[in-house]
Length: 365
Image (cartoon, rainbow, N blue to C red; front, side, top):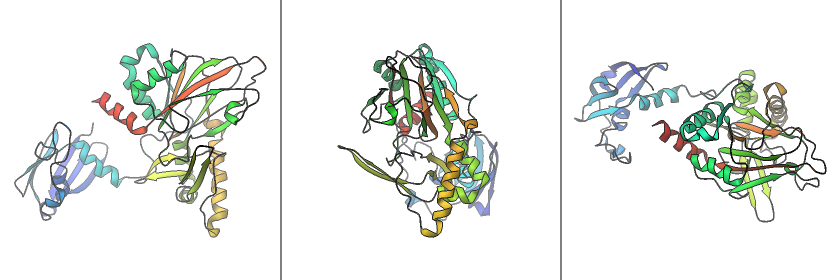
């Protein structure tokens, strides 16, 4: 919870100098303070819908006096008493400090950061599960019924399942004569799912149902941590990977989607998504004078992501459910031996990032 430590009217009332605990001092404009008012006159209390027309605010508006009573209370020159929470003021500080490093960026060696929970405790522990998912990028829930029913039971506690071209839920059943790599017993490089979509699913759930083979551990790599490491190592390489779009052509009998996005995607200067799917990656849209540097940058990015020192292995047992952030965490698996009588079956589904964030906010409130 942000706390206002300092407030001062400056610039003849046209601006405020604000100090927030842990965020330092910064300036906000008087017109912004008037627009940010959260009182019942400016926002409908039941829905938070805006009532104030921002274009109707006097462009020469000033702040007369201010007090702090939990919120910032400002007497405005138009006669309105504006109430602005500290959390709203923090938005300006965050915009000023926007960078590729945010609160979720950790050292990519995440082995000690994967929290575990029990399904029987979810009624009381759901907030802690989503906290772990939000902060660490992943969590494990044990004691889940090893079936589609069990999968849906956990998923729908968090939000509606996000249907994709793979359906509402899907199954990974290893076979001796696989059609695709995911059905084989070979290792899978860490990757993100559905990179060809404009907004890939934000969270993946993967439940182990039948595991009768040695090996086949799930692998996780913190893509945000690796991206921050790359940025610290070489801002020029980072700039190439966050600016050059790459095509992802996905064509099947009944599906055709061609996405286009950089390998590292930013929003307002902060990490938004990483994408990596070596088997689905198309051609980069790179000019000739940047091509050599771009391919060298991709090689370095791959090296960081495939470093065993940043890879966390989780050997899921039947009834264990792995949840992870598909925008941030890359996932794969180690090899295993299926044999003639072995069985390895997992089921999974996706949740939309907005729905998970909504559930998180409601639980915290």
